Image (cartoon, rainbow, N blue to C red; front, side, top):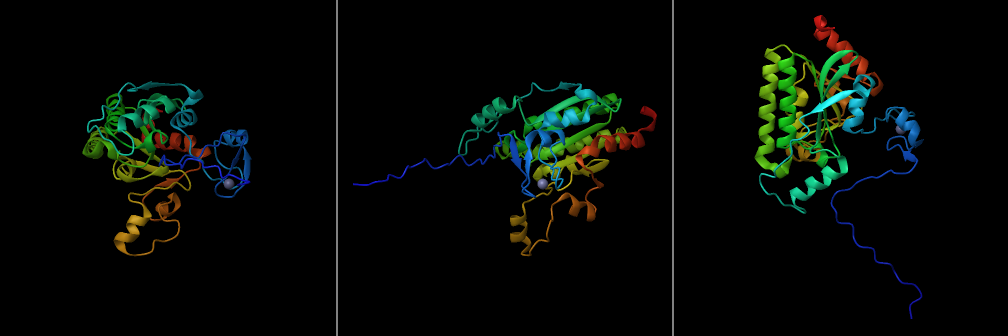
Length: 283
Ligand SMILES: [Zn+2]
């Protein structure tokens, strides 16, 4: 006779690890401080103790940048048609519909237009919680349209990146977006319309390799992971140990890849100042 029986819990095999912090308290990953969630919210989701910038979603981004949280969204109806009928652990179409119901978005991007310190701007904000903010045909098309709208209307553009890179489930279709967006940015540059790229944690892969680094001004939040390939891949390729803190905003600023590292609370005034410098007549 056995006195105790071991409960066998099913093995977690979902492959997607998600940290859910639904309680009232959040622990800072950096300084281990326990923070009341409301305090964190009031502090723009920045740890009051060590200034770690927690990730925030696309809607919160827009709220932080637009005046009185007022803006119009556009191009929100486009959705992926799963061109490769791709299946890995799950089918891509299942992943899409799950992400759509979780975020209330059709894909990993929100295009919006409104005022930033009284000045018209177009802001394209990526949503990391939608399949890792990956860039497929829809994100590529939405950003291209935002660029074209900004160019036509001669309105400055801000793109807020938060992305794991190209969306592998769309194969070459996702890689093609890099060229398409870059071409649209070149036209915008010729039309002399300012473009500010804001890189947030994380900005990697094909997004870094295209529009995120093509701004007239490339700025990042403190401590953001920014890179092309992951550190392990690079170490294996070059067979060298990588330096401490490499691929973080501050390191990239020091090496000249970024123009500034800006605290979240200073982002709006910083962008506003930069835009009045770039387009003095429009102020
Ligand atoms: Zn902290």
